[in-house]
Amino acid sequence: DAKTTQPNSMESNEEEPVHLPCNHSTISGTDYIHWYRQLPSQGPEYVIHGLTSNVNNRMASLAIAEDRKSSTLILHRATLRDAAVYYCIRGGIIFGKGTRLHILP
Amino acid sequence: NAGVMQNPRHLVRRRGQEARLRCSPMKGHSHVYWYRQLPEEGLKFMVYLQKENIIDESGMPKERFSAEFPKEGPSILRIQQVVRGDSAAYFCASSPLSANSPLHFGNGTRLTVT
Image 1 (cartoon, rainbow over the protein chains, first blue to last red):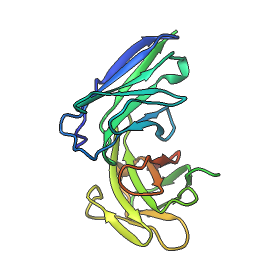
Image 2 (tube, rainbow over the protein chains, first blue to last red):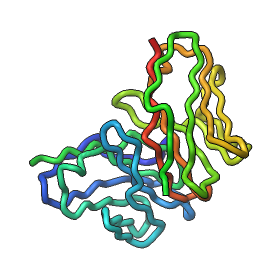
Image 3 (cartoon, rainbow over the protein chains, first blue to last red):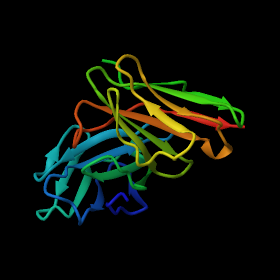
């Protein structure tokens, strides 16, 4: 049981911001939230993780709700190379089915 | 600093043969995880190992599958008497610590059983 809920798929236009939501309503106080993405024919790639505060890195930003029951991965300016399956994981190693992100040129 | 190395990238076996998949974790990582992925599906956790110990094998099929991570050398996922349903991509990940450390994945071994 992945214990996270994500939309099956999303679409976005190239060069626009993308907000990928994730619900993790049963998260415990010590569980980190991790995001990974998987491009076709490759292994998953770490994107970002956080506990309570919003986080930024060169790839993306992570906005965590105050009650920690949901989070949003933000790609500030999507490119075609961002088309992938994005996985949100709470506190461990169990992956769900993720969100397949399509980028429209 | 080399990433997680998996070999072979592609492996073809006939039904009934054995498949051995190897995973060398990143330098300094002592935790290894194996996942299986069927086409168009998500990653299914199989087993979590630390050097010489199996920590969590809750996702491993009860028969024919085994995993090890010896003191020296790579981690091995072994599938005996393969069947067509074993055809999948098998991914290995490593991390330096256990809980809450990001996982670093290899590019997988694609097993085809004919």
